[in-house]
Image (cartoon, rainbow, N blue to C red; front, top):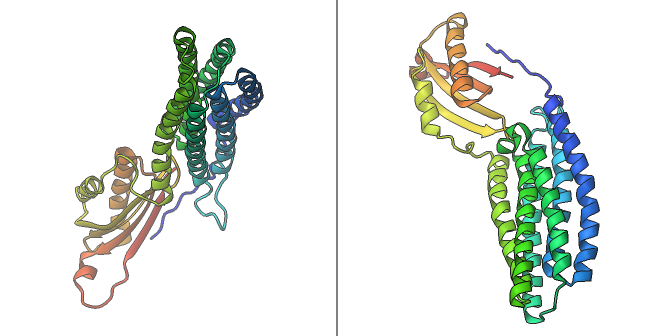
Length: 315
């Protein structure tokens, strides 16, 4: 017995709005990167140049996020039967990896600047960093619409890029004030190190979460024993085994398992299947489930017995 419902994902209204925000933000960020890089060279500020580099990865992150939304909204086909939901996860992983690579470059440049200290133009640092902070806070606020950055790993990666760069800009302003009143030029490369550490900190969580999804690990915050226990309490279920749960994308989960029930015709077991899938949907937000029924009579028999298969995909 098989029941299967499948709908093409398509790009929702929220996806279209987010894509527009990403494209506008990308254009503004690229323009600002050029401006900040020129200002950083003129002011001899490694912190500004580091921030320009961070903003460049922001632009890359926004581009990947937009591509991720486009690809993950495409429906499945004969080859990609699950669709392209993991495109957004892959984009998030590449984004996070780019953050870590950038941080390594910042650490090297900061060490060189600590050895060979240069005077910086404090006024330029403060003005440019102030503009950067306003720009990045505005983009981060736009990306946080409807709280999507809390659930979609792809958008979360882009949001972290922007929020982290806003924090870096604030640190540059504070550092410029410290240099003005103390005259200690080493503050500039030290700030670059702090920015690098913040970049690694923000990128590591995204890398870990995206790798878990790509490796089909248990979804974050879920316990296998809890799901097994809840399924075992469903009326008509005797035992649950071979349970597997994984993420199809940032927000969608899938499950497969074997369920032992009494020997009965398919018309009677249908009600058990409905209760199982209702539980999975309501309690664990699992809308794509493959359930294999096994009968007590089959399980106890010494000869091979063909199991009853049921596949349900709720959208």
